[in-house]
Image 1 (tube, rainbow, N blue to C red):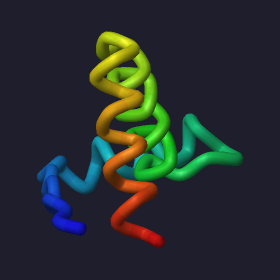
Image 2: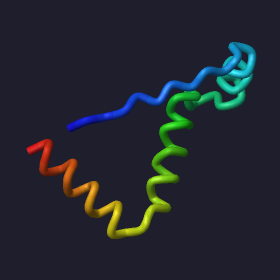
Image 3: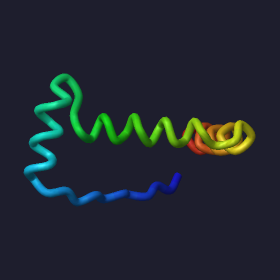
Image 4: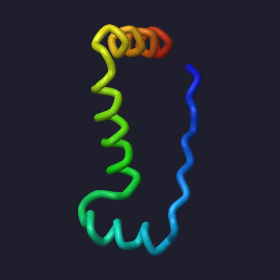
Amino acid sequence: MSSREIALWVDERWYQALSLHLKNETVEDKLNNYLDELISQLPDHTREKISREIWEEDQ
């Protein structure tokens, strides 16, 4: 399975402010959740095809 790293750069002050605001969730967790939300907006057939391919590669 191939994966792609997505690197984001943010000023430390923004990161700290977000971390304090989120309290029980990390900035990284929040971004992962947002990415999942974006993926869920893809057409069903696209999500199903990719999910199936990933599952097959993991077997």
